[in-house]
Image (tube, rainbow, N blue to C red; front, side):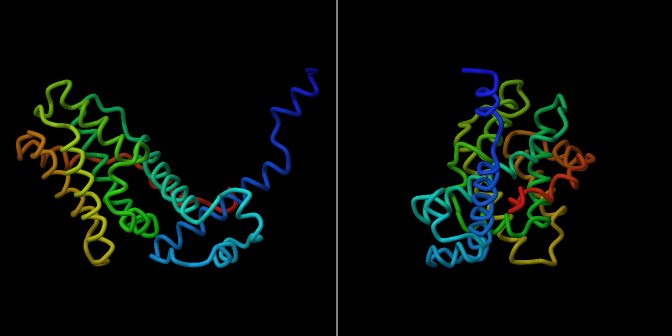
Length: 225
C-alpha cells in the first residue's frame, strides 16, 4: 500500500461524515420519541422527524428496535461520560456520593434524557455500559478499601439503580421539587445503606460538587455532531 493509499484509508471522507450525521439525526429523533413514550410509530415518521430519507434508515438500522436500542445506549454512555469527569477524590465514598448527587441534578437539567432512561425502566440497570457499570465500579472500590460494608455488590447495584430511576421519575413528575435536595437526601440514604454513619454521610453529601455545567448540554446527541 502506498502512502497515498494509506491516507485515503485513514482519512474520513465526505461520505463518512454524511453517514455519521444521518445516523446521529436518527438517534436524536429516536431519543425524542422515547422521551415522549411514542415508539409505536412507522419508520417513515421517524425519518421525517430526523429529516432524512426513508432509504437512509436501512443503511444504518435493520428495524426500529435496533434504532431505539442504539438511542438508549447513546444516552446512557453520554450520561455516564459526564460522571467520568468527577474529581479523582481519594475517598470512594465521596466519589460515589458525587455521582449520585450529580445524577439527580442532571435529571432536572436534561429532562428528555431522564424520560428516555425512565421509560426504559430496569433494562437500564442491567446494561453493561452507561450508569450501571460505573456505579458497580464505585461500590466495589468502596468495599475494597473498607469504606463500604461487604455485601452482594449486584444486589447493592440493583437497589441503587432502582432508586436512581425512582428519583428520576419523581423529579420528572414534580417540576417544583428541588432536584439538588432530592439527590442529596437520596445519596445520604444510599451511603447509610452501604455502611457509612448517618452523620458522616450527611457531611459527605454537603461537600461542593464538581462543575459539569459546561458538559451537561451535550448529553443528548446533536444531529450536527
